[in-house]
Image (tube, rainbow, N blue to C red; front, side, top):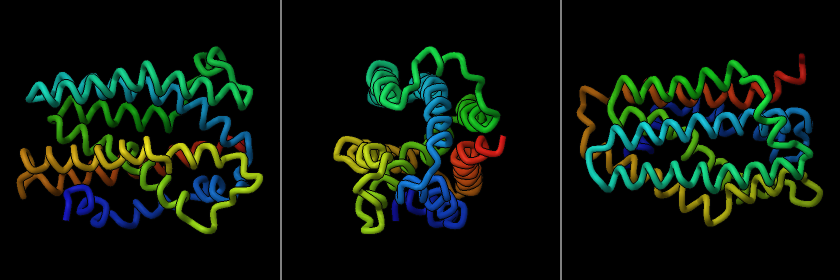
Amino acid sequence: MSFFTRLRDDNADIWSRYVGHPFVQGLQDGTLPKPAFEYYLKQDYLFLIQFAKAYALAAYKSDTLDQMKAATATVSALIDTEMALHIEYCAQWGISEKEMQEIAEDPQNMAYTRYVLEKGHSGDILDLYVALSPCVIGYGEIGKLLGQSARTKREGNPYLPWIEMYAGDDYQAVFRSAIEQLDGLAEERLTPARYASLSKTFAEATRLEVGFWQMGLDVLKS
């Protein structure tokens, strides 16, 4: 069993709440209210900026040149490619970059991203990548599940491009690489005494991912 699989299986309840959240179900069947998705997109812009900082921190926490190269490559991909793609995608929803820059950071967004950064600052590179894994790996798993499911609405689903992005070959390669990277770090650094703490970090980061989905639904109540 890989390290990631162990973390996921030992936290199966919160993980299932994450990958099966009503927000995700709304993406799958096309029933998610558009204001919820639009708010999520705006917050995700701010989220990506903070995650670029987290990977910059991973470069600093790296032990080897290869680890530094991997972390800095991710920073570059987030800033130079992912952000541009996000801006382009949001424009299709009528959301400008200026609008995303000016929106207030949601408390759920802030709690999640700062938690990840705090784990990186206070711990080592394994602590940081465990905190990052529910996002990086979780989106790959969600994309794969929705992409393969016969229940996913394809005709007339406005969220199908989002699903196809995370179910597609490019992100699925990122998904597999992230698992391999996490498992590799665990081989180097994991000890029996550390596992409970790392599992707790994984559970908390996953809980904050649940909150990130819920953030989109809660805006409908305001």
